[in-house]
Length: 163
Image (cartoon, rainbow, N blue to C red):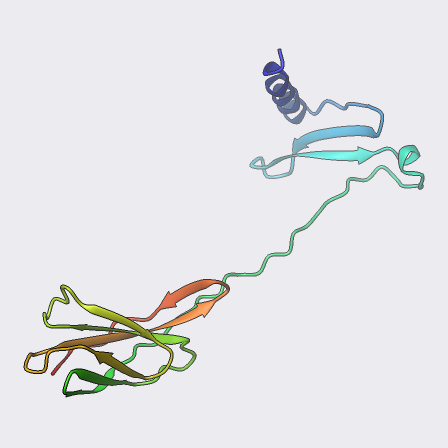
């Protein structure tokens, strides 16, 4: 029986909204429903009883509006790898700065397809990667990112620099 109550209530509300029947209860003086003009939208207007609220009001529906702002499209520019210097067992990478970027992600690999690549997040345009082998060819690419309202937006990957 308890499971049927929400279903019966939903059916009654549906019938009220379709037929436009007016109900009267303790604190609600009238509920009316009907077509809102163009035939696409149906709505229910609830009129409260002035006696229960201790103020004089006319029987007009109360509407609530929610202010929404349009979503901003956030774009992050594309960075480039300016210079890669390999000395001993460290690689120093210098990037082109991107306006408004929070930080940069640098990928460094022996393979041009970036399999088994090392990834490093840095806040500025200089990056140092340690523990590399000196006499090997390396590939480097990078991209900028921006944090806004708890989300991270990424720019495009730069062209691959071979060293």
